[in-house]
Image 1 (cartoon, rainbow, N blue to C red):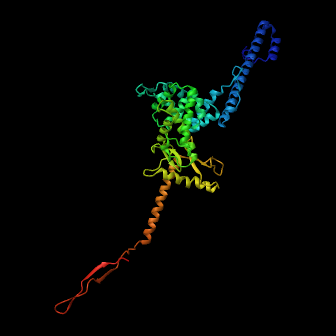
Image 2: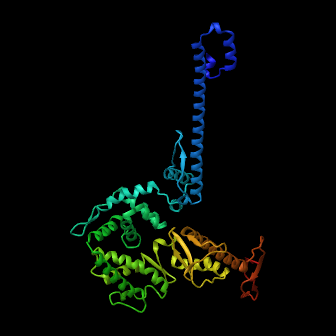
Image 3: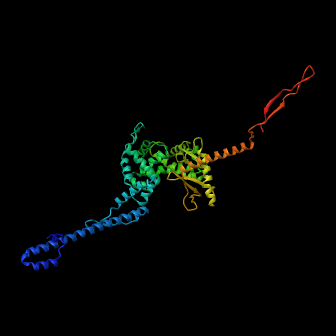
Length: 451
C-alpha cells in the first residue's frame, strides 16, 4: 500500500502476486490498491506540470526584464513594443513595463551616483516619467496660487517647503531639457517656466516675489486678442533697441550698451521681450516702451550682466576667478588661448569664436553661427569649473615665469663673496707735516675688499 500511495507500484509484479495469492486478497482490495497508485501518478504529473509552468513563467519574466533593461541602457526603451509574459497559473498577461523601467532606472541612478543633468538625459531619452520628480512638482504647484499682493501693493503669502521644492526641481530639469520638464509639469509648465525666467534673468530672485508677478499676470484678465496686441507693441519696442537703424525715443538711453555685434543683439532680444511682456501684463509699467526701457536698464546693471567681446553674459553664468582678478579680462584670454588656438589648429579660424552659455551650466564654443567641433567631431564645450581652473593654473604659471625672469636678472648682477675675503691696508689721507720738519706717519685704515 505504501508503494501505491506514492505512485511507485509495479503493476506487473503486483498482478503476478495477486494471481498467486488470490485467496488472500479480495477484488475490492485489489481495485483500491490500483486506484491509489493511479491517483498518486496523476498527482505527480500535475506537480511536475506546475513546476514546469512556474519555471516557464520565471523564464518569461526574466526574458522581458532583460530585453527592456538592454533597451533602457541603450536609450531605446520608448521604441520597444509591449510584450506579454506567462503567469504562474499558466495564463498570459501584459508585462508591466512602466513599473519595471522606473525601478530599474532608479536603481541604476543610485548605483552610479548619476548627476542630475545625466539623470534628466537618462529619463528623457527613454521617455520614462521620474515619479519622484513628478510628485514633487505637482505637490508644490497648488501653493503657487496663494502668492500675490495686497491692494496696497505689499507681498501676500510665502511659498512653503513644497512650493519651493517644486520650483527648484522644475528649474533644474527645465534648464537641461524643457520638453521633458513640460511632460512632468503638464498644464503648469508656462507658469513654472515664467517664474524661473524672472528668478534667473528678470530681476526677481526671490521665489515668492517672482510667483506673485506671474500670478498677477494670470489674474489680470487680459483677453487673448488684447494679449496679441500687447506682444506686438513689445516687439516693436524691442526692435527699437536691437535694430541699430531704429531708435525709439523712449529707449534711446540704452544706445551703446550692446556694442556693434548684431548676433548678440538678436540673442538678447528674446530676453528683453519676454521680461517686458510679463511686466506689462502684470501691470508693473504703463506701456510696452516703458517695459522695454526698464528691462534694458536692468540688464545694463554691471551687477547683473557683463559685456565681453560684444557678447552680453549674465554674471551668474560666468566662471569664478580669484579675488582681485577681473573676469572681463580672463574670458577673452581664455577664448584666445584655448578654443581659439584649437580653431586655428583645425583650420577654422579664431576670429569669430564665441562662448555661449549652455543648458548644462557651462559654455559651448560657437563660430560663424554654428557650434564648433573638435577633431573627433564632438561639439566643444567647457564647464565653468574648467575655465576657473584654467585661470588659476595660468595665474600660477604667469607668477612662476615672472619669478624665473627676476631670478635670472639677479644671477646676472650677483656679486661673488669669497669665503675668506682679502684684507688690505691703504692710506686714506696724505702724511701731515710736523713743525719739527718730520712727517707724521699717514693714518691707515683696514677694510675688506669684496671680489
